[in-house]
Image (spheres, one colour):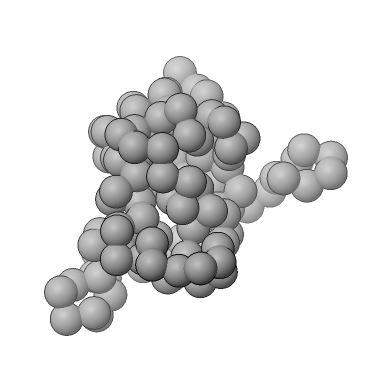
Length: 117
């Protein structure tokens, strides 16, 4: 976050209940030595068709959300395994905060969350 803890920007609705870390960062993107380049894998199976072309109806592929700073998530955002790569990838993608009713522990520990509701 910024030094003054204030973030301004666009928020993208990603209202998927129980969106787990395996969906946020699929396993094929974990084969790296450094943290660099993880943004490419963020929500890959939701963002792209099997042929690699972007899904135009997916929220993060729409022009108005291309440079969003916030994700508005559903309950239990980032649940399942403690895959830090999911958090790092979202940060590299440009996400500075996630607003959701509840989170997986890894997202709370990595200070990328804003509880709501």
